[in-house]
Image (cartoon, rainbow, N blue to C red; front, side, top):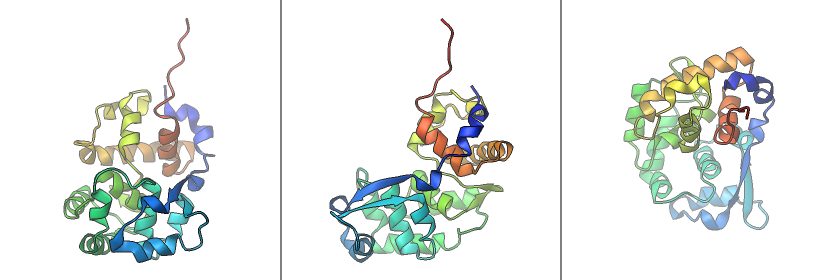
Length: 215
């Protein structure tokens, strides 16, 4: 099966409207209470819905952008202490300084690796969410999200274009990220879609579609 076969669907996916409900009760972070209070300021029932469009529109305020991206990516704040660690004052300051150099610019894989390792609580899944919304380019291709759900879709080996990424996992994903972006970029040009729409398609359908087989 080729993902190109779904080109007409992919290029009309309303990916900017992809949103998630976020409840204040899940986002008690003392170190960034002021930012979180601002995000929930006009909410009803202590709930906000954040979509990709909201995040795109917050890029000029990096602290708000970072917290909104985390809320969108991890509505229940995830497991463990990664987000708390990332939003600790020193880590957040370092992340802000790093991302100031990522917006609408080219970043190497080597730099990406270094920056991820240098910030407590930051991993590839989270970093690729930031790079996606900041319109970062890597090896000439627009950065798109590569998280565990996308890896799971690629690992199924359903789509021919991604066969070389069948064994991708969290340990080797950083070394395969540039290849993933190159494949996504090539397909997006061919079907005239945004690279983000291909990632969105993989998120929505990549773990459930399968080849039709005659009985």
